[in-house]
View 1: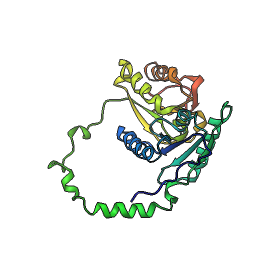
View 2: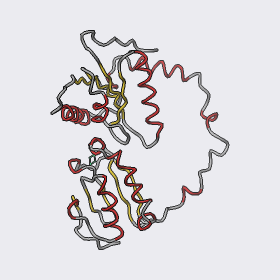
View 3: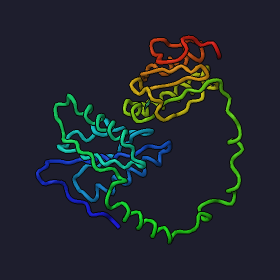
View 4: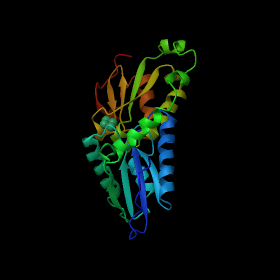
Length: 258
Ligand code: FES
């Protein structure tokens, strides 16, 4: 069943919709939300529908709002499940900050959270009924389903972990876009490549210092990190065993345990 969608108010010169979801670690995350955006755009010819991600992928909400900035009204539809009231309140602030100081100020409207959509139970019931016509999971896997690759049993060579926060607030500060900068800095530096394992994390709490990186085993927290800082901080910390004091947020002031 497809829910009927009302056309935008005729007194609006232009409307844009931001479909706001949570990100994942795979490109399929982007494809899924992009596909839904395309279908929604087909329902409303002339309305721009822009996917955006609360965390772990890009574009983040401020970037997506920027892409829709020429609209008079931007409707932000949160598609996050589970819905977190604190996260929603913070997203309201992100939108307000994005609009502050702009010459042109579109109206920004947040739709109701997905979990509160009146039509959702009906849609889920229809999806469950359709699922009854689908084959058993055994038809989706190959015969080797009892075995995992041997490589999944090996711990890769390393001396350090670099924990990179891609929680919502760091994501809005550009952390997702900086992840390739972090992995590139490691892979292109022989002194780091065999020593540092980069890991993405959810929110670590001192969001005001984001984009945030924690380097273990020493447990030094660094932030806010820009493009030019990441490789320099890792090289100085791991290869030269020196804490970059200007960007240290928390943890020991000296590296003594490498
Ligand atoms: S989102 Fe990164 S510390 Fe909170």
